[in-house]
Every structure is written in structure tokens, then in C-alpha cells.
Image (cartoon, rainbow, N blue to C red):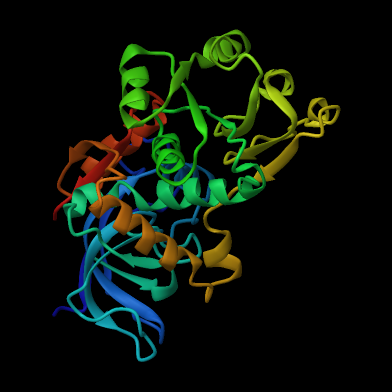
Length: 335
């Protein structure tokens, strides 16, 4: 094996329309640590996290490789690895503190990796990890056990997005919640319904459309775009309800939620990889999710497959994600 590999990165934060916003490079194959896997990357998916890092983290002329979803094959293992062997097919979302997945080979800690679902192709699998982890950890923040007999209603804002698509499915597979998903176009409404949403509300007319399908309001909310919905949530969330936000709006004012004692939670799926790197929770989560996939209870959210993995294709994928009209996930596969 050569000591070098192809990769896609950037040297300066630029609009995606600029040809230098993502460039093809050749870099050394990463070395692996004791708990690392070296994965030959077969497919990656594009998340809003990719575009946010590209635009907000300027490497000052040094090449930075991003990418936070991958599926591929293990080609080497660290001396302390116990969960995987060479040849295993895997899926994962990695860590923002390490080199990204937009490369032929990627070093990743075994604690955040799962065995790929046998029933999915590499491209189909690459669509799921980051959004599935985020959605799963979102469910963990709701006090569902205390209300198991009573059920409850979950509002998924942005039901056709990557995280929303995963949360709808996981809520149906793992809970008895009634799921209301927001969508504003017929195609996104159909997508959310096909994934299992019981009802559709329009996020452009949130209060009225939610009360039409959930007259008593909702107990739980996923909020991927929180800046302009706090007053609406104060109206439609029931007293003692819970909101989980996955975005980072500046200067967010939450005081309108106080009178109903509505709890606000943040979810960032990189918390464990960054602050608890030896916690195996995400490995175990991905193993359980793979079983759900192979049992037919969770399906891929891949809707658009592009290729090959190079700068031109990834610029196209980033531009589509930045357009905020995509349904499901965009995956780039093959070298």
C-alpha cells in the first residue's frame, strides 16, 4: 500500500461556489492509535455540520479535511482494539476533533463505530450514522419511561431533514409516542408520512396546524431551527414539556418557556467523542440501530447518490445541503 491517499479538503473558508472552497489533495494515510481502526472509506454523506465547519473554521492555508459520516471496510486495527477485525464492514460519524472522512482512508476510535447493517449497501449505510445518533440521543433526553403508559405526542420540526427522518422512524420503532412532523411541501410531507409520522403540520403556520392535529398540544419537540419558534413553542408545548434543540442560534431568548416550566435540552452528537472518548455508548447505539435496519424497522434515508468522491462532487453536495430544500440525505460514494 502506498503511504499517500486521495482526499478532499479546504485551506480557506469560502462560498461553495468558489472552486477553491473544496479541493482535491494527496495526503499521508493517517497513523492509528491503540483503539483506532483504519477504515477504507467507500461512501460518505453530507450533513449541515460539514457546511458549518467549512464556513466557520478557517484553517489559515493548511489543508483541513472534513466529513462526519462514513461507511467502509476496516483495513488495520490498533493494538488494543477488541470490537473489530480487519475486513469488517463498518459505519460511523467520527469526531469533529479528528481528520474527517472525505478521504480514501480514515482513522477512527472503535468506541464510536458500529458494524454496518448487512442489508444495506455502503451508500445506503453512510446516510444514517450522524442523524441516527443525534435522533437516538434526542429520545434519551425525553423522560419517556415516566409517561410510558400515558404515551405522549412528539413534534418533529423539519420532518424531511436528516435528523427528523431518523427521529420519526426511531420514535415509531422504540416508543408509543404519537408523531407529528412538520413539512411545507407535498413531497416532504409524503416523505415524513411514509417514514411513519402520524400527522403532518406546516412549519410556516405552526401553531394553528399543530393544534389541528394535536388539540391538547405536544409533550416533546425536536428543534433543528430554533431562532424564530420560541414563542410558538411556548404556546403549543404542554406544561412540563421538553424541547431538544440541535442548532446553535446566537442570543436565543428562552424566557417565554418559563411559565409552563418547559425544559430546554441541547443535543450535540459529538459530545461523547470529544469529552468522553472511551464511552462505548455510540458503538452500542449503532449496533442496535444496525439490528433495527436488518429487521426492517429502520430504513436508509438516502435520497440522492452522487459520485465519485472528489472535490467537484462534494462541492455539488454541499451546495445542495446549503439550499435547505433537500429531503433525506445526500451520499457521495466511490473513488
